[in-house]
Length: 111
Image (cartoon, rainbow, N blue to C red; front, side, top):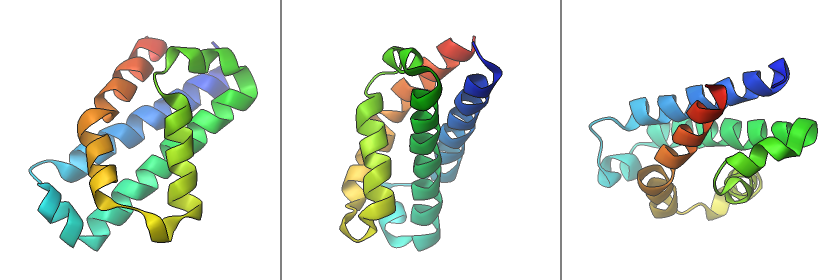
């Protein structure tokens, strides 16, 4: 695997781990009321989506090994361009239901 793709995979892993660190011990109500927490989580999701976009441009076959990568990139686009329509419940749900899968796929690719 190319070094540049590995760099993007590391960026994804670090962003996902940061999200988990940010929300440790938090509930949805904490997330909803903490603008700084929401901003940090959203920024890390932006990084994840952008890194996936860059991988797509360099070797799209890698993305076939990452579950729901299209949805992740779409989510990034909503965060960046549709910031005024973000539903905190959806973001929290993605953290609870999908982020582990992404981290697992990336860890497997990094080896």
